[in-house]
Amino acid sequence: DVLEKQNENNSPTKTPDQKNELYLIKQSIYQYTNEYYTLIPLNGYSEEKLPIIDNIEALKAQEKVLDDLFELELSYKMLLGAQANLKNISPLDYLYKSINCQFEAMNRDDIDSQFILRYIWASEPTIDIEQIFKIARPNEDERLRKRNLNNHYLLWHGTSICNLISILTRGLLVGSLVANATGSLFGKGIYTADVFKKSLGYCSGVKQNDNERCFMLLCEVALGNIKEVGASRVQTTDDDDDEEDEDEAKDDDAVLDLKKYQSRKGVGRSIPDPKHTIVRNDGVQIPLGQLIDNKNYGGNYYGGLNHNEYIVYDESQVAIRYLVQFRR
Image (cartoon, rainbow, N blue to C red; front, top):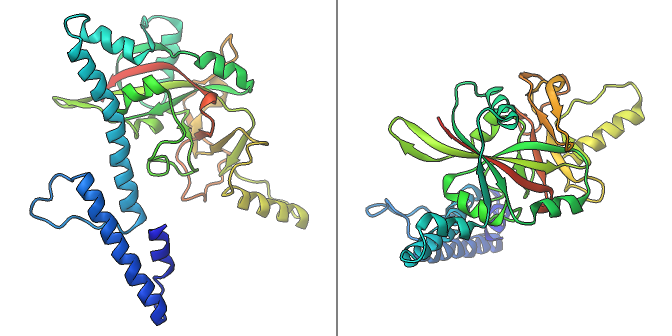
């Protein structure tokens, strides 16, 4: 709120009252910044001035720091618990029970593994896949079934390795502190993609020698009725139709009407060839096609998207199905 007021009062011509208000706002920003750094010290500024958090970008960067700290806190508590119970249970068994999530290492020759590998290699043919795990979290199947939505897809979600234990324990959450800071063009929600390469940009792992070990989630997402953003619209000569198109364009930026739509899709310029999307026996669709140009791409939405992005705003629409361990 303070930053918004600062922006409102930053006009070139200001009255004395506005100048005084701006001064008070800046004093508040300095005070809040000092209080924040007292609670959350920053590394690497022993001989430099700490940066003032006086713009939205700086604020989002610190939100990301806090989000990572909260994720690490859960991991740290689990590791402390494993250490404290070392005489009674092995650390790995303790962590496995604490996460409360079933893992099953998949055979590379299984049909499901082959589908997943094809899905990955459609956009990243040189990636080194080390292992694929089948994941089952308590109550996610029942929760997804109760939503009773159509359009189920297997979609990618990239994450940092420091968030992994928290995600496997709690599931993917809509209300993350940093939901508007990292790749969240369409508001606070759970973001997924139908191109491995797209989600790869949000992965960070452990550096080992000349490469990095990372993890990627593959989730079943119930998209329901989809609101598309960035698709091309048919040009007509009818004035009424033109006005309707203008209304639709404005609606792209509006808050999603969750009574009408259950998900939003940012349309990308490059998409998996829909001819090669398969439907499993359980009705879940997997886009396995090679990347092709999207004939329905309209662009012009915040510079356009390279690949499709799918956003849901209800955690019950997502179930984590697989965890892919890889090197890059």
